[in-house]
Every structure is written in C-alpha cells, then in structure tokens.
Image 1 (tube, rainbow, N blue to C red):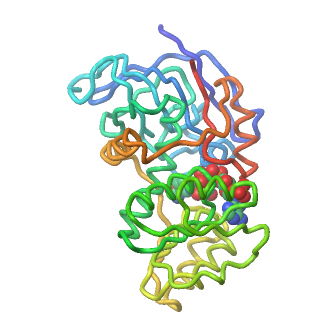
Image 2 (cartoon, rainbow, N blue to C red; image 1 turned 180 degrees about the vertical axis):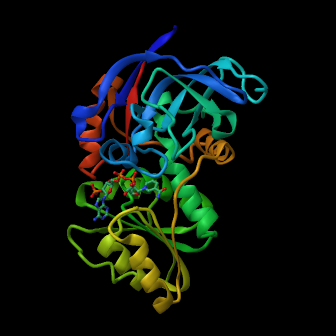
Length: 318
Ligand SMILES: NC(=O)c1ccc[n+]([C@@H]2O[C@H](COP(=O)([O-])OP(=O)(O)OC[C@H]3O[C@@H](n4cnc5c(N)ncnc54)[C@H](OP(=O)(O)O)[C@@H]3O)[C@@H](O)[C@H]2O)c1
C-alpha cells in the first residue's frame, strides 16, 4: 500500500486536534487526476471546519483531511481523462464544500474542478487563489453583475477575498472603495483601490454614497452600514455565514430597494482558467503573508483565526 503524509482531524476542536499522520495514498477514479500537492492555501473555512461540522463536512467524514485550495503536479490519470497530461501543473479547490483532502501530499480531483496553474506564479502564490478568488469572481460577476464604470465598495480589502476582489474589480474597469486598518492602507492602494477608508480612524462609512455594488466580507454592523452606501436598485453580496448575516440582509433589502444575497462559493475549472489568463498577464497577484511547512499547520490556523491576515497564508510541501 502506497502511503503519504496528511493532516487529519479525528474530532472537531482547537488546533490540538490537527494530526500529522501517515495514511493511504488515494487512487484517481474515472474522470479524476491524482495531483502531487506542492502548496495549500489556507482559508477561514479551514479553521471553522476544524472546530465544528459545516455543510459538506459532518461527523460522518471523521477522520477528515482538512483544506481545499491546492497547487501541484498531475502524476496519474483516471480512466477517461483527456483534459490534462502527466506533468501538468494545476490548481483548484476540488469538491468544495465536500472533502477535498488538501492538507496532504497527494489528492484526487475531478478534472472539471482544476485549471492549468499560471506559469507566472509560484505554486505557493497559485495555491492562494482558488477559494478566495473564485468567491470574489462569483460575487462580483455572477451575482452582482459588476460592469465597467460602476463603483464597488469592498469591505475588508486586505484579506484573502478582498485583495483578489480589488484586483478583479479594477480589471473589470470599476471604481473601488475599500476599508482596512492603518497598516494595510498602502497595501490596498497598491492593489488599485481608488478610495481607502481606515476603519480604525473613521468608524463610519457614511461619507460614501450611491455605490452600485457592495461586496461585504465582514458582516455585522459593516453589513448594516452597507445599506446606507448602496444606491436604490444596487446589489449587496455578503460572504460570512455567521452573525445573522442572511436574516439582517433579508430584513433590510426590501426597505432600501436593494438586491441582497449571501453566496456560497462553488468549484469552477472554467473560472480558474480565466484567472490563469489574468495572472499570466500580471493582472492578478497573490500577496503571501506567511508560508508554513504542512506539519506546522497549527501556526497557520492560529494566525488565520486572528482575522488580520494580509492576503494569504499557505502551506508548502516542497
Ligand atoms: N460564503 C462563501 O462562500 C465564502 C467564501 C470565502 C470566504 N468567506 C468568508 O468571508 C470572510 C472573509 O474571508 P477572507 O478569506 O477574506 O478572510 P481573511 O483573509 O481572514 O480576512 C482578513 C482580513 O479582514 C480584515 N478585517 C478584519 N476586520 C475588519 C473590519 N472591521 N473592517 C475591514 N476589514 C477588516 C483584515 O484587515 P485588517 O488587518 O486591516 O483589519 C484582514 O486583512 C470570512 O468570514 C470567510 O469565512 C465566505
């Protein structure tokens, strides 16, 4: 039996439940490839799914290999696979919100959930993209239908989703307003943000009016205030699955005449391929805030839980 290293949990809990173990290497099934993982992107859903069951990962999945975002090399093909060849470098977030098993040396993935990795990016930079950038893409373009010349307010512009959302909105030709703490003001300006509000110095965002689209990555009072800045007929797309976000948005949307949606990201090799083109053209970059060996994943989780990561944290297997 071929084995591999992986980080699994046998129960939900704090970082102590993360176990670096030898387990059986998976085999690609029909329509799947086997990927040797070079880097893994960390997202807030990783620590949430370590602590509690989420849609797609329940007690029935235990022991469960955490994580979704990977970049790596195709090392074996399942039956019927023609889209990729052995040796291709790929990236994606297979099967989300079902188990992908990203925190491991090898994973299998349906081919539809992968795209060729941007040659211009390292594996570590590429591994940051899938979940966060797909979320930004699906929120801005599939749900809010952001157009060139429109204005978008992105709360939390320095985070994983926010820093890709700024770049995607600028590529689309929109004007971008965003919020960060003081230490990230220059960072989001360099990404292309046109107006930056330092939320530690200016508690209210009521100086902003009549934006077309809001991408809310924070929830709570930030979502509530977003209804004051969006114009009638505009859109608010919210991401956090907590803090009564959906109930609050559903209550306020009719009063303000605004379209409101909470979205849940889904895998898309096609959209990843679009992002590969942007990254190769230098229009989509990853800021790496920290890189950790797979066995030190607990350190990455602690930082992610601080909610003040700039860009992305990744794990390396090289
Ligand atoms: N529904 C979905 O499918 C989906 C998909 C992806 C993510 N999400 C959710 O979306 C949220 C964002 O995800 P993420 O990956 O971007 O998280 P993240 O990388 O952990 O975001 C951290 C960023 O949030 C900023 N921040 C914290 N408090 C803020 C505030 N009050 N105002 C403005 N910025 C603030 C921080 O900037 P400062 O350090 O400058 O404060 C930091 O850069 C999370 O709740 C995540 O679970 C949902």
